[in-house]
Length: 454
Image (cartoon, rainbow, N blue to C red; front, side, top):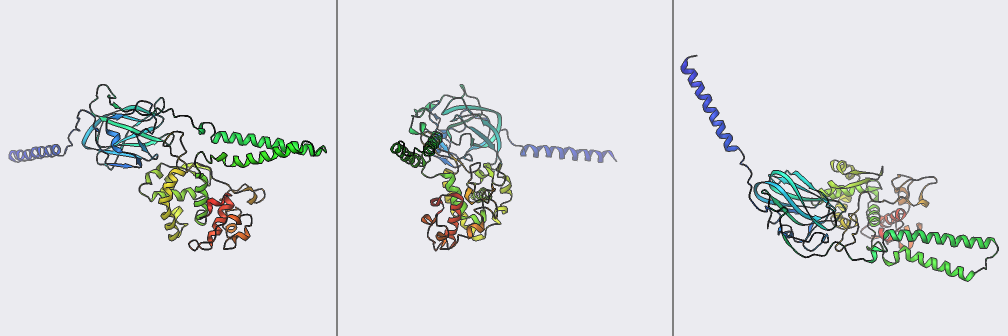
């Protein structure tokens, strides 16, 4: 190769390298900005899910006194464990330090994103010592972020955040001084629920049962000794008193379910389980509820985080399999029946957030939680085959089997279930002749007619 050709080749190679370097510099992402001050100050969230109260409270640089009640007026309430709040920082910024005042006995997660679609976990805010709203900080070392997200609390089911702050440049002091607004302390005043609650009621029921057993033993003993007339008036008074106390105890002396009138677990099982028993039987109840919930965009993330009891094995599992295979549930429904379930479910799901989602907390503004590892009723003993310990999932021998249910179908269901006839609902044109049948089936499994009559 001649000297001229070599020179031209080298010149072309050099020119190509220079152009490639120039293009690389043009395409290279600039270093993240690092402004001073609170990156979230005064910003409204760009997106949120299942949050109560004014969202501007979260970034107004105003906090409650340390230890203030968890649901103080300046705190936003995260309704479920899937609740999140997202802010758009306006540009890619290096986030190094985070501060949050939130309910002390819960954990909260922070995520970052460059595009608002793919989020990376930045870190977790751990529980703090003490009660009520407490300030905590997190050092994330410098993560590039355009979007910042916080939420998905884990703990007692009651989540709240009163202030969130993010920094690139570490302020002094840290966490910084913010305006403090007075709020009640976390020590709530005593109420009747502190003295007579579900645990106290259970102990009282045991004592009452033991006293009743002693009274019956004494009665039998006197009859055996031929002393049936001994203190007969006293025994009658004691027996009557025990009957009155037993009646009042059944209703927890007017406190019902401390303090709810409706028992969420029971109502959920008895209403949904009986109305859709043909498709659900027993073992598919939680699975189909999760599938129906997952079709609601606002509930999808909540279902992904949900833990459910597998009613076949009684093992608590995640929802990963049912979400990956919704046909495992939907194949048992006709299109019309699934549409029926899907139509009522957005309404009943809101109820279920309360009735199936959390237990009451003994402070102001409390809500609840359940659906998953909750108790599910077995068949009543008197409806099981001899020696059987089957639950309602047993196909043919269970009291809740289709054959048992169908035997009480039609308008004359009350006549075939005489012990239930006083509370069987009339056949409705909407439900057809199966209305009484489903009620009878639900009552057979539950023992509570009023919860099944729709």
